[in-house]
Length: 136
Image (cartoon, rainbow, N blue to C red; front, side, top):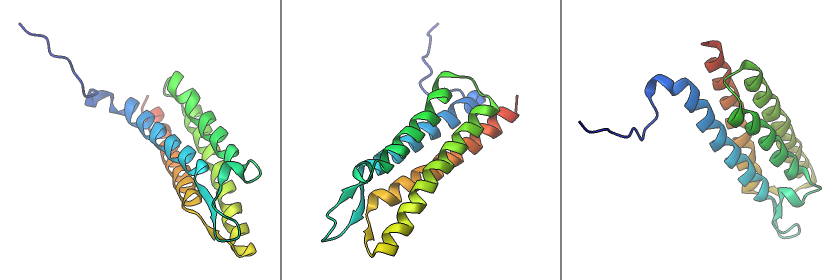
């Protein structure tokens, strides 16, 4: 009799590992966007989000706060709500910078768009977390 090692998560436990996987990916995207250029242009250079008055750091902290309880806790609805709230905070920061850059005549860099996509993915992960928690 041979014993096989299961390398792929059990599909019956998908409700547990799918939200966690999406949350880790979304956090990585958000943090990557925070370190990317938010302003692009000849006058501004390529200014990273973390160097623009620390607003990129707000995204890094929001993503870290969103992922920490999810990695160490169980599937609870409160964690999903917490993730969505942090995604809203990060999305608000991205929206403010997008409007401010357009008002000041600067072009937005790719980092701002990646960070915004990461915040949207965080919100989706929080929503998926809420759905998984409601199945208990």
